[in-house]
Length: 80
Image (tube, rainbow, N blue to C red; front, side, top):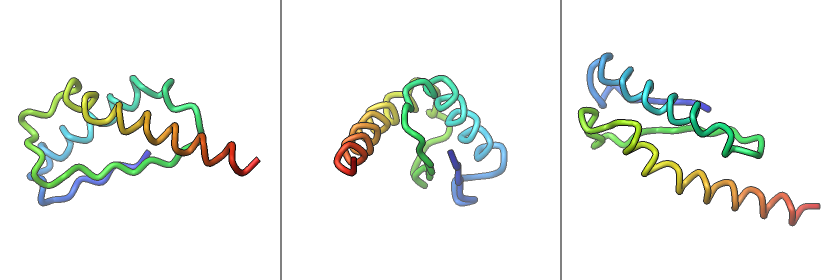
C-alpha cells in the first residue's frame, strides 16, 4: 500500500492525520485483501481532514476494495 498526501491538503499535522486514518483502515481490513495487490491511495484535495475518521474512511473505501477484489479475481480466473 502506498499513501500520497499532497501538501495542498494542509500542514504536516493534517497530512499525518489523514495518513494515520488510512493506515488504520488498511490494518483493520487486511484480511479482506485476499489477492496480492499494490494499492496506491491519493486522497482528494477537497477532503475535509477535520471530518475524516475511521467510519468515513470505511464507508468510502470498503466498497471500492470489494469491487477491486472482484475485478482482479475475475481477470485472474480468465487468464488460467
